[in-house]
Length: 452
Image 1 (cartoon, helix red, strand yellow):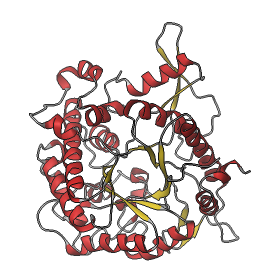
Image 2 (cartoon, rainbow, N blue to C red; image 1 turned 60 degrees about the vertical axis):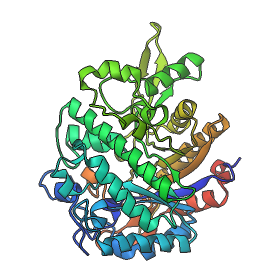
Image 3 (tube, rainbow, N blue to C red; image 1 turned 135 degrees about the vertical axis):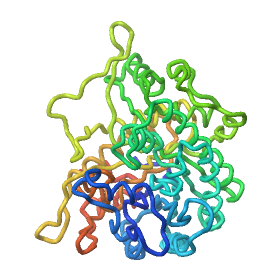
Image 4 (cartoon, rainbow, N blue to C red; image 1 turned 90 degrees about the horizontal axis):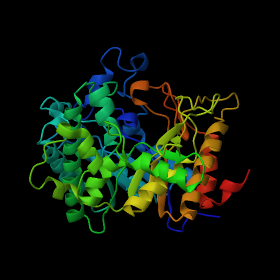
């Protein structure tokens, strides 16, 4: 069995993780430029100063994408590379890089999916309050306008924000990601509201400027799976995934109900109480810009069941469970149930905008990179995504994370997620066994997934 005929096969990466050239050609500083140079914040003091040197090697990288047979590439734009101060004067050299990258992708027959913000917030704007500043939505709107004017004649697929649940909570509440803040709960809730307003304004600008634009999300949130396929356990999993039951922002409904329904989840309003954000006149109307596809970044999930008392019970992972190098559990069913539950709630085509395996890969004595775990992992997850389609979910595409090994945020270069191995000393690229396997999956539109 194959995927739908219009299913899109791709891979993804993010600007700070791959580009390098951190202080070249007029680029401004981002919060990650500052954070990674702060002692003790990133594994072994690693930084994204050079990363994969994609800024200089993009033609080679696009040629490798073509060799794999990618139909689409999800990239992100470095906001301070284009606008060094975050607002104001455009940096022609920075904008020119993305102009050339888009042309190179299109010449290779690869459709660009552009994410406008994948965490490298301009440091100059952070010094003015960052996302906590009410004006942040206008800053982001102005930045969006610059990008759609430059690329909108060639780019139809856009994602304003990547994983706001992560960059807000890990960056501004827990503090182990940039900028490293530890704000109060009411502050991060207000910040979340500002990012949603920013997304709404960005979506309006994209749609006004780009004919036939497809605007989507790239959400990372709590994914829950039923312990069994009984109706009770399925209902318990749906409830656990989509009903705000605790005071955190990992719930998909917190981020998506305002977009698709024009309101925050009622149970969140009751639970957060006085910590709910200040909502000004027109905010919810601006946020309420229903998206064309629902992007989900899924790596794992948790199992639940309906308890004897009627409440949701978490089913612990068994001892000795499969773990990735990141010590994340391997739970392929997350790609069946996560998409199914958001499809049932929002009725938008679901794309997996990130999914992949942190592994310990190296170049073998034969000059190749053998990564059977990544192949097995991806096969299992894709088979479950195909099961979601059989369950009735409208599946739109799959973007493997990532196209190449790269800077893994606070973990530096410890973990390798790529289909392409990168030697960070020489910048030599080597296609892993998984890249050739993925090439065959793409060529068969998923038919080879059932082959041993």
